[in-house]
Image (cartoon, rainbow over all chains, first blue to last red; front, side, top):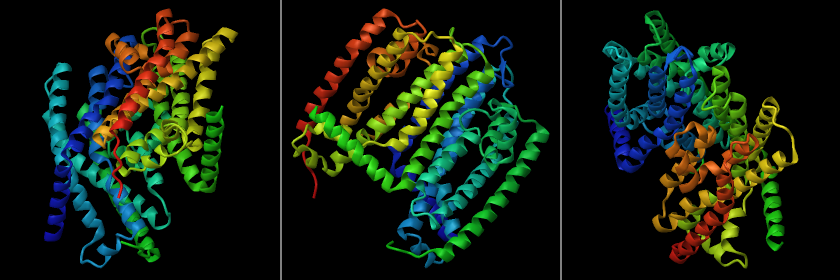
Length: 266
Length: 262
């Protein structure tokens, strides 16, 4: 366990090494939000009922902010590193060490995300409090407390999904393009840009079946107050279910891939 | 004429290379399809909400999104593969190779590559959106409308060049200009919606300071009859103005360049 603790620390130090990049990354989050503010402002000014897709204007703005931050927290950058390790033979150096590669990457992933999670949680809390103020009702801190473990499950689910996907590198010479496409589309169908409620019914049902919606849409719905008690319980159970399925799939993919693997370079 | 022939050769060579690596071509098309899907989210929002914004109906806004998609395709095919490589040429000192060629180096680094795969999905989706919007809005297909639309689209394509080039040239001073270039790509996405949805200050900044809105908004505004005459005249003047600024910065940048290769 001591080895993984050190890996976690290494991941944490990595983010402090590129501080400018870290802050620019946070600032660049707000560009797409800027477009959404004007879009929703325009649409809500024309909506007589003041409600669109079941959201009021402040709720929609809260959704946009939370989804944007959560999508940043969940971004699966580690999958590209795993892919590079497979392609360039770097995986060989982990194979001969007494470490589990999956756990190694998981702890490094957690380390890299820690500072971002702390900054984002502070921002989320501010937006949540401000949003509650605009909505003219007391801030329901219980929702925020429920959100925290759900966000941890989201992180685990996202890691499981993209760790399994990164195994494509065993069979494809260049799979970073496919990884980018899956993560980009995955972000859209997880509700990382707009709430899934904007999609027509059949698509919404389809996206609801897939694991992606439990990484962003579900946790953000808890904060926005659009998810209710039974929905939250069902959502958590489905998160756990998908973590199990994706981890299992990842193990199978990697087991098959390692049989094929031949280290070149490194 | 010499440069046109040369550009023809550049395009042909790029296409041959892309056809040789078919998997890369298919991945480029799929990547752009994902981006088109992201752009279509705005279309979904507009049409499922079915509401007008500042007097523009969803049908009309579709032409703005279509124009943006089409010009993004042109930008992706013509400018992006070249302009995004410039900081790398400076960092790795591979600019030396272009400076010693008997052709204008700016032309060489700006137009040597052409990526068809990145453009195709945008061309297809953009043209479909423009045609659907044109038909649904009942815009008459007159000589003036068609020529005006094409002229302002071409003008937008030309203005795209200095808008993308100037921030990238900063790399001659800073070596790395990733964050600045990233901001320009982010600003580019502002055209995902018509400029009329933004407030007056943002509109003025996007037309006169960083002319990002001229690129994709003026053509649809012209056919809908909402493009003010001063804006039309300004668009014509903006082409030489911003190209002039870009050439001036390029000259300064090249003087600053010192080969640093091993």
